[in-house]
Amino acid sequence: MTDAFKQLVAGRPKISPLLVDCANGVGTQAAETLKEYLGDTLPLNLENTATTTRGALNHACGADYVKTTQQLPPSLEGKLRPVERGCSLDGDADRLMYFYIDEKRQFRMLDGDKIAALVAAFIVDLVKLSGLQSKIRVGIVQTAYANGASTKYLAQRLPVKCVPTGVKHLHHAAESFDIGVYFEANGHGTVLFSRNTLETLERHEPINPAQQTALNHIINLTKLINQTVGDALSDMLLVEVVLAHKAYTGVEWDSLYTDLPNRLVKVVVNDRNSFVTTDAERRLVSPPGLQNRIDELVVKYDQGRTFVRPSGTEDVVRVYAEAGLRIAADDLAYRVAGMVYDEAGGDSTTRPKEFL
Image 1 (cartoon, rainbow, N blue to C red):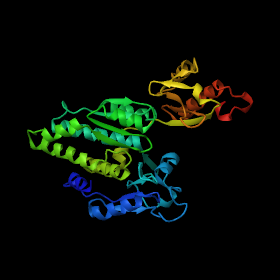
Image 2 (cartoon, rainbow, N blue to C red):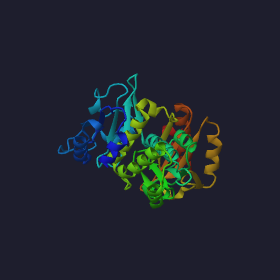
Image 3 (cartoon, rainbow, N blue to C red):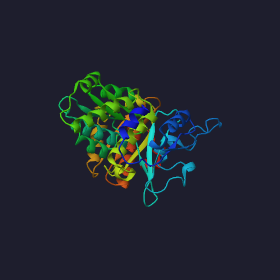
Image 4 (cartoon, helix red, strand yellow):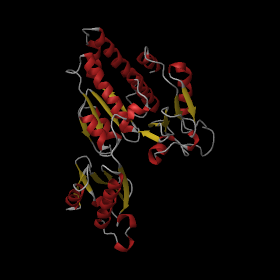
């Protein structure tokens, strides 16, 4: 893996140091080994490495903290200068979240959607440069939770498939492509290379040096990427390869597309099983008539999109909404949540104020 990384960044400008939040978890030891092996090829500044401190695991740090709070872990305050990038692993190092501080000293998050867009577009470019676009089909798999702006960006470059929430669905769908990319918004994902693709790469005879270089890069990617989902350090090296090739800072990466404002609301219900979905959980078939009322509401919002899905583990229904403006996304989410609450038979006297 690390040898492939060194080959992929050989000849590229020197890579600036990367701050890595290890979440005081098991990824710390592997990251320390990686840091020693990579040396100046990719300087790593490791933070939150207190693996023997009781209660420190994921406490105010890690990928989930960054994703849910959309802010820098307090322990990293003052350790990133403007435009410098960092990333957070989660406690068991199977998820990855990137971020940077912009020139206005505002925190900017680069989540799984951003990682998917960066990686998928890079692989598509390499396949074209290698002359293999007619033999290798690259595709990306998302869930309904993927930001609509990311879906629009990707759909202009490669096939996009939407599946129900859950890695088992994403992984299975990714196997339908020659090269399948998938990352959940929480930073959990990988890239799959089919057996046919590996054989095609081995047999391919480039007709010029540019094709040979691109082919070598793809082959090295197959060695760099851990196709068993859940290796955040491998994903981290993949991101660093693409940034090195593109000469991107977090700013250029972030500018690939602008996320639509979104809101996720949880509604407690007596029976989540009364809410049944179809179309990769994007539409309701039960309760009858609710989806039609939602559709009539959504068209009133610029770039509006929403869906309702029951939790798989608890009696709650989740409502996701996005729109062109933050205030509109919030309004849409809470209005749909109010519909769900009423449909579930909630007492109007106990109806949450935010759903009014």
